[in-house]
Length: 417
Ligand SMILES: Cc1cc2nc3c(=O)[nH]c(=O)nc-3n(C[C@H](O)[C@H](O)[C@H](O)COP(=O)(O)OP(=O)(O)OC[C@H]3O[C@@H](n4cnc5c(N)ncnc54)[C@H](O)[C@@H]3O)c2cc1C
Image 1 (tube, protein in one colour):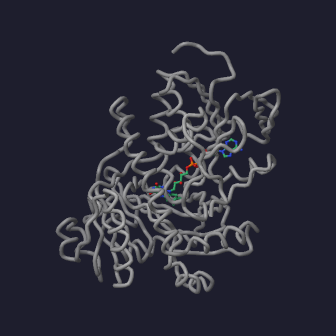
Image 2 (cartoon, rainbow, N blue to C red):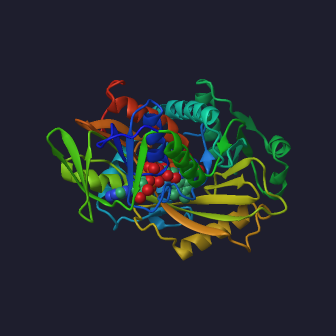
């Protein structure tokens, strides 16, 4: 690797899956990159132990017509999968109204297809990376079954299948028997009314990916990674960005790409940049596989849980606590998720031996579409990947770097609708 003098061509803030992928999209073009993060290593924020799903086909936006029916349950706190904190961050009001503005059929279609295109780019970018550098992160195409337990939900699911099939996605609607033929472990699940099968969906461990890709870049590409740099303020001076850490260090940046997940909004607000991001906290648990662990990834749409196999372990993720900004595991919520998992797939894992408990904050936009846009001269945002940041990281990275280099047209700034 040829030595390079600072500042690098591109400085990336945040070394989650999105930031590491963004660094890759830049170094693969021959650019020098400085990647900074306050943590001790890559992938330790929201990316660390997420659901591990590369959901290239399931890009359905969070807000759609069915959201209206969920509101009473949300307000009453009667649906164990969701919590809404109205007394948390005041941004909830503006964000919530914007979410409701997206809760109709045409926005659902628009937002889902927008994300679908990004997912398609992501799959291609991932394939291209792995052809060049085989990274071990337990990546495999497992296929996915979305299970439905009532007819109304199944009909809504079927509509989305129709929409995405028209855009080249392989998805089929199955009855309970056909779903069990695909995944015999479903014999343990009661009350299935139907399922959507997406044979091309993949899984992979996001932390292993982040660490593996960083190692790959460090050895072969002009990348400097600086961990333990807690960015406090960003200012413009003489045509460059100056990044100051809490400890008083300063980094010069020619072109800055911000990938700081949920913290991006607070980081950029002093520059007058408003990012409509809301924390949606989720939890995950990892257990040894049980006697009937599914080989196919499973989404229980009633309990809002995802299950997938990573080697001899089962990763389960779920819960959506809107406007909860504390990334620590909440023992009560974790216990609820464990109960839901036992109800859903009782023999899939050894629930008596929990190997890992985790919580993370999904950085969510009201339309479920990430914000990949130039915000100021030399400052690009790559944030707001919500429920699908692992899935969308590679394609988002390519778009962000193209934008930073002026290769792509402008994308709408948030407030887009
Ligand atoms: C329970 C759960 C399950 C999920 N399951 C899936 C799934 O199955 N599939 C999927 O596609 N997505 C899933 N997601 C969503 C996905 O994990 C996120 O969208 C994604 O991790 C966001 O990545 P990111 O790189 O933007 O953020 P992060 O991973 O949070 O990275 C941001 C980085 O910025 C750094 N940073 C922040 N502020 C500063 C600062 N001031 N100075 C320096 N560094 C800073 C942080 O330390 C962090 O490393 C899930 C999320 C959760 C919580």
